[in-house]
Length: 316
Image (cartoon, rainbow, N blue to C red; front, side, top):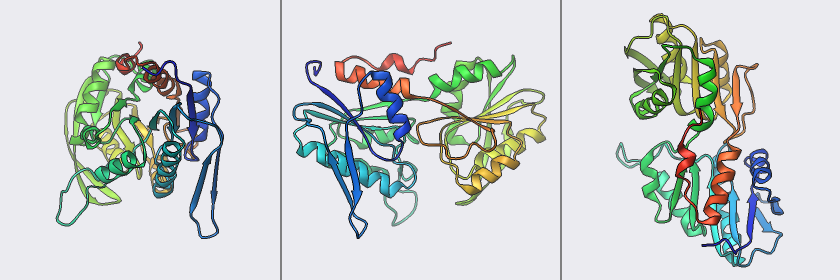
């Protein structure tokens, strides 16, 4: 139990707006951090507050640019460890490199495991994260991992948008479990799209299992970057007679290609969270919901030694 220890919250440069929202929820001011660069580009970090014996939380999603934000997190963890913090929790709303979670071809790394090792060695005693690309990544850590979900924020919003007979659609086989969870939350039907990846930038959606004709559909996934999976699945749904089409993703990492695809697609609205900064709302086509209260509540419960299980539930 660390309830008698001072709690300190710091943030890197990846998503300071979310960190400020979390701090406001908890009623704890963000700690001061100097983050600068040497002339050769090396990062320099200094925690300006005395954290000896404190319960420290460092908020940093490893989103774009992933190498920079990851390195920044590692250096902040090391700085906190060397400043004699009592416990250090890495709060990672988005865990980068998560798609490299297995050796699926010869001579390739399992980078998600490498990143877990780096975070642990750098000084993290605990990890708080959200919507990992693969559940098994929790097992890559030899320290406690609290894995939260964006669905308690996204599902109530979708509930207001959907009428009776809505269908939650998994845009590929890897998203079936997530889609099933949303279907239960929304009391909706379930459908699955079969996908074949052509290359890193494009996919083909070939078959649909389920009835979507005349029904509102919600495509669910944990993240999107080029929007290829979502847009091709949405096109297939339209061909099968679907009505309005929404997409729900926890992490919106859309690049320029993804923004252009989404703008030209038949997706009416993409609902996401602020776990990573959304730099372009695609002329209002992207709806951003805040997960600050979930992460803030989890921080306070971890600090107080309480359970975070109830944060998985959708409030409807």
